[in-house]
Length: 176
Image 1 (cartoon, rainbow, N blue to C red):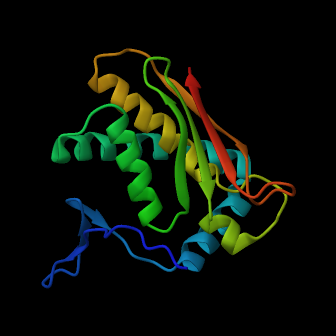
Image 2: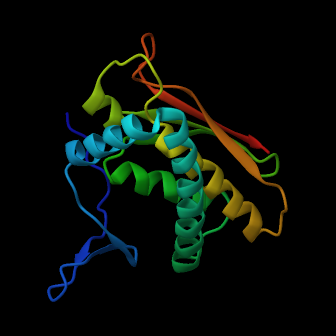
């Protein structure tokens, strides 16, 4: 039985060809195209340096997205985080499942099943979804900031579905 995700609102401007979802401009590219570009950059820079760059860029992007979506839909707290996980899951990155979320403590645990990176790269016995790591801290910190909290967080990937013995990725958010 095939599961169908709830509809993702996509609008295409007939004059410009710009795709939007939830009032944000989007790009639509094949998974292999994105992952092949990702792998080429990783090879040129090294995985550690590339992961660092992506962490900061992803953090900033997640903060912006959560801020705009919270405002657009009147969301706050855990509802913003869950909306973010739902939208990430609907965009083909994989299925993001919030296993734990404690806003007061600044902690979260996110499980990633059906990773686009693992589907494209296979079992390469290393963490390959590091691109997502900054997203979780950025989302958490935006939600905390909106509540007036000065607490800030960091996120790490603790396992990957691309590693032997694991069938899913796991990310943990903790206070910085």
